[in-house]
Image 1: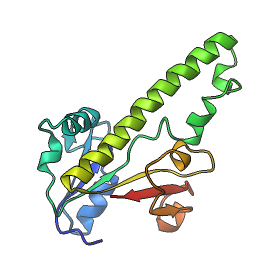
Image 2 (image 1 turned 90 degrees about the vertical axis):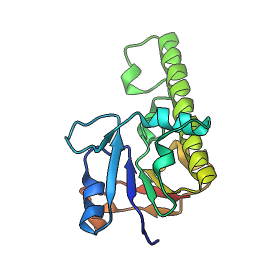
Image 3 (image 1 turned 60 degrees about the horizontal axis):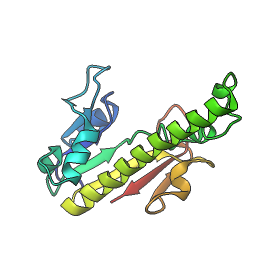
Image 4 (image 1 turned 120 degrees about the vertical axis):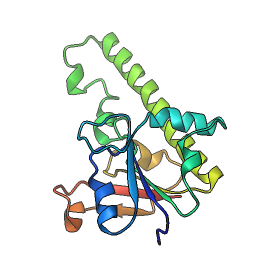
Length: 177
């Protein structure tokens, strides 16, 4: 894939990926709701931007050009294998709860996961509708939610990111739109 425009790194406040694109001579900015590392170029509520764009309202998506690329590290908190464990009565964090309290926690977690899942699908829809090139990353292990519940299979699965300079094996999937 050739990148002739700017790379917009969504949900990335550390500057890690933005700075690597810049080293390659590709203009890049990052966007996140937080700026804990002092690197975030655009402190913005990306979930609100996704909702606004999906509803046809003005949003930061209007500033992404046809030659640009969005690289998104969409929050995996409700899709990861750890989140899957939170859907079971035997989840360690629920050990001091009653059965009824455990069920209430699972229902609340399920509702939050549905909200994140809808946001992810809306994010894809906005990019597809606007013709924005986008890829997003999420964990890829044996028990992740997206493995059996997403619009399509990932385009690339990286089973060992250490081979590309990461500190962890951390299997990761990438979806391209």
